[in-house]
Length: 133
Ligand code: FES
Image 1 (tube, protein in one colour):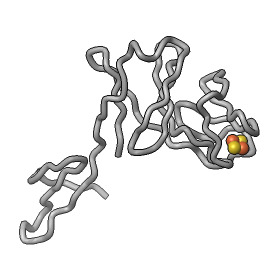
Image 2 (tube, protein in one colour):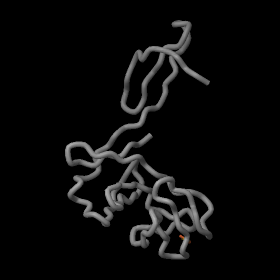
Image 3 (spheres, helix red, strand yellow):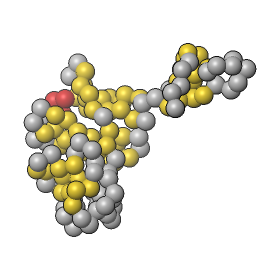
Image 4 (cartoon, helix red, strand yellow):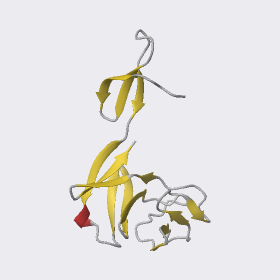
């Protein structure tokens, strides 16, 4: 469904739109918040950093020139992925060997079948930001 309207109010993490009939209740549409999580220099090339995002343990990884942020909890049985080996843009759970694509969070090897949450990452003025819904 396409929503057309004018922003009438902006609050942290949401934009409220007034659509059509102005006597109708406005629709609040959640917007991602960009949160500074580290300085780029905190994550060496090939390195990783444990952070908290949206009150969740998360892992910021620097692979080549790219940064990825994933929830740091394996969806198979809750093992932190913190120390899991990374290869081919995927991280392996150190407990039972499930693998997750760092770009999408998709589980690409059993025993995990559910994806891990991923967060968009950007770098501005030497600082790393993560978008949170
Ligand atoms: S806890 Fe990660 S594969 Fe089992």
